[in-house]
Length: 232
Image 1 (cartoon, rainbow, N blue to C red):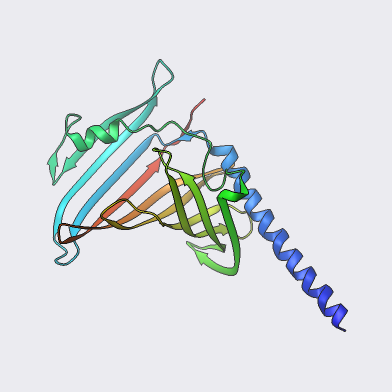
Image 2 (image 1 turned 180 degrees about the horizontal axis):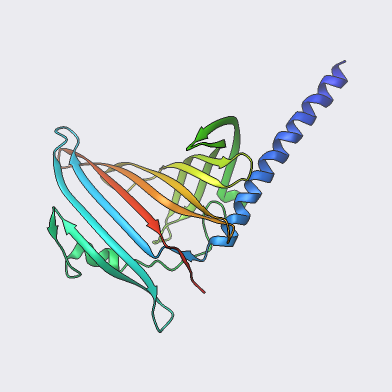
């Protein structure tokens, strides 16, 4: 009887591991298919508030388009921008920084890493529903390097379509934050292109809590992206 129970337990574990690997491998394949995609339209809204009074300290609303120039370099073009409800142009420092951002795609990310030391994934054996999609949830710890080659650790939960393995939502927390920054939480909603069989960030919500000079502030950033095109 014990041997039978042991074999049943091994079988269940094997099925769970296979199902997890299969779903994650599907997500990896979708990522492989779409890592060269660039958003053609980016809409970013930032609101900084005083945490104690909830007073808005500053806000910015920027719409940007991207294109490939004659030198095969991605250019960011300003559509319109407002800072504290006043029109802003390319000469404004905050807008200038966004326009100078490098949107060239790179083959990296938690679904593309090939080094198992850089990512730990645990099946939470939990089924739920997000926007009408049945999803399976996974606990993820992802280690990467930021633009300054400093180690960055993200921990959180990823929800995959339980049938197709398509990423639906991720909620990640940065474990090591810059000075004065108390926490950084990033929530990403994903869209999917059936023709190209790839997923893409559709909407990103970032919450940054800051404590400096006796003040506690909350910066909320919402970014929506669409009109993706392929960078060669």
